[in-house]
Image (cartoon, rainbow, N blue to C red; front, side):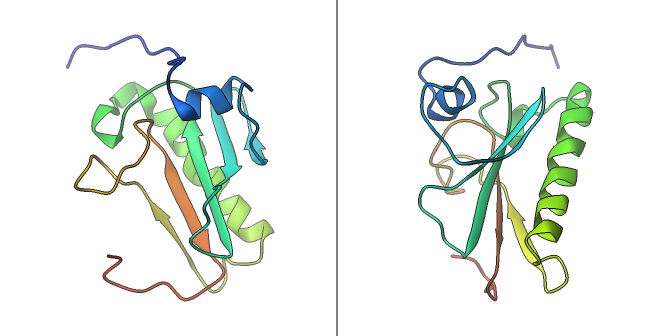
Length: 122
């Protein structure tokens, strides 16, 4: 797979949040990752974790992405612990494409918790 240089997309909703053009309730931030509250929460705790570079979906992840990808999962687990939901459980979801329910074409992981999750999800 050919490596593609990734930059923020000025037309992308999540890139605009990363750039500070659209406000968001930030819960985590580093050089590579941003975590912010979902504006349409589906659970008492619903946070999105995104890379600070524009990737459309999980399908665009490359081997060189392992550092920020690991950071996203560590940040999500730490946030779940801080919010007191780690013990009882939580869900991390990445939707891919239209049939997968992806509403914003920027890779993001939903952290959902604070209530009993159902299966199948929908």
